[in-house]
Length: 170
Ligand code: FEO
Image (cartoon, rainbow, N blue to C red; front, side, top):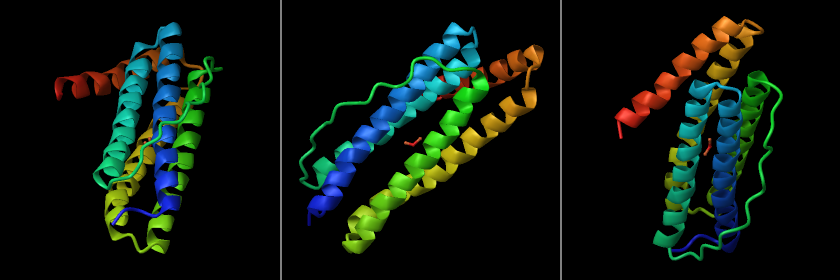
């Protein structure tokens, strides 16, 4: 059974949204590099990669279920930001928006009594809990750092470790 036309369209839209998330985080990583904050940049680069993986999961699911995948143009992300705090406020807001979008997809799958889509989307629901938790943690740490440049450098180093650990695990 293939998903309804409405759910297929919403899943195609979600492929775009996930790639747009990757694009946004990559743009943020580039800005962090420009601010000489390589640890923040590594964290965001990794996040961008995860978003591309999310997009590909939906892409593959649509193909597995004999649906048409029609890739859409991606919105250009902002290329400049005010401060690291500004970046992470936007990351958190963005993740909340993605959660709402995933929840809407799940709602459509429930309305359609499309159980295969529900099971597939459950992974994304759990993932969004993690994504919101991680972005909130970084945001809170950036808030605590405030204007303390030494603390910012230390946080940058710490976040760089996440990138290094993930690279080592590949
Ligand atoms: Fe794919 Fe960060 O949500």
